Image (cartoon, rainbow, N blue to C red; front, side):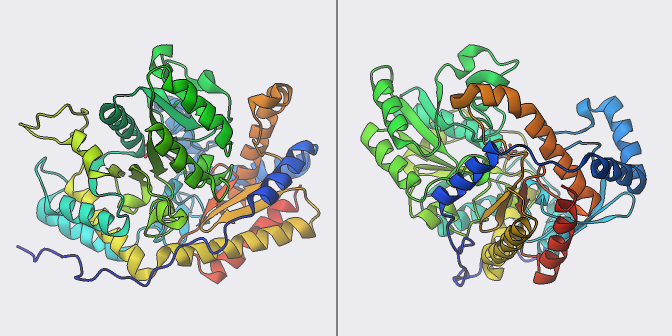
Length: 491
Ligand SMILES: Cc1ncc(COP(=O)(O)O)c(C=O)c1O
């Protein structure tokens, strides 16, 4: 039996946070608001036709596969937020900073599978450990494995607020579980999220998605009862949050306030520097639990997560994505021991408990992948390396935008880079007329930008978000900037 790898006696301490400078949010919002007021500046029509032609020619096998996929997979893709304009690109190989499609085209990967691959794609040292485990134990046994314990210990080491940890299958599941846990622990019913934030696709959380104030707009197939005790509060508005907490006090109380600590949609609407601390204070005042959804920020912002970066201690933390370094299945809840004990599993756990669990949750494969990936993130200072790549990318994009006289906006929170063109969806129900008129064309423009980037060898998250990784060397970023400039010249 191979020796069981153990956590190094003293885990690496030389890591830094990945956000070198928190964006001046007032300035970002001013620039974004100015952008939304401008007429849309899109890719010139003949240039866009050329882009579509180029994709057709260069990506014939992808197109063919996508057409086949559409006959057996609704929409031809497996996530409602997946990009499929004009067709989904089918990937064949992933390594470091790059992806290769089935036609052999190489891309610089700023999607990073939606965020998990902070170490770069298919990172060899973790792969080797995972293969070793698979050969020895296979992916799952359904029984306790040492890696579950090691992973929980490692998380507690870097995020002390996660005194205990429960592994689940996805961010969605973990958010569901955290909400149930908060309600069980507090005996209260209301849950307040921040409008525009994405917390997965559970019944309760398909609410106020993307555009603040839209409530149940996307809640198809979800009975109104499922969202009856969910509210959304506008981003960065502590006054509005306080009013909701006050009102809820009279009608059953607030179990939890749930935030993405960098702001909705991974900082697409950036949180003001002091917002999280303000939410913490309000939660304390009203006896609500503070849940940080760190599905994106956990480990990407730094080993201590956004909670360490902002120095705000949540009661519960939801992790996902980087938690397993890109391996399935990534999701879990960490938090205060007294709260977490309401999840206590197993026969004989007699307390009133929140029912949570899944057949493949906490399988050895996911736990080992997470355990080794997180150690590698610390050892290599991955968040800071990726953050510096994000700074370089953002700086370069800002210069290109300025040079070309475009009204677009680039800003970043370390390795999370936002490139907002006229496809920006910084709309809300507070301006209903604009929302009705502009949401669709802006969304389509974002799709066109994504397609144009892809035609020039750049994979982005839905045409406006770029995750950088440790594999993004200066050369990779500079090459990416050349390609972005070529695309932005098509406008
Ligand atoms: C902040 C946040 N929370 C939750 C989720 C849901 O995670 P999953 O896709 O693993 O269910 C996501 C996914 O993108 C996310 O970004």
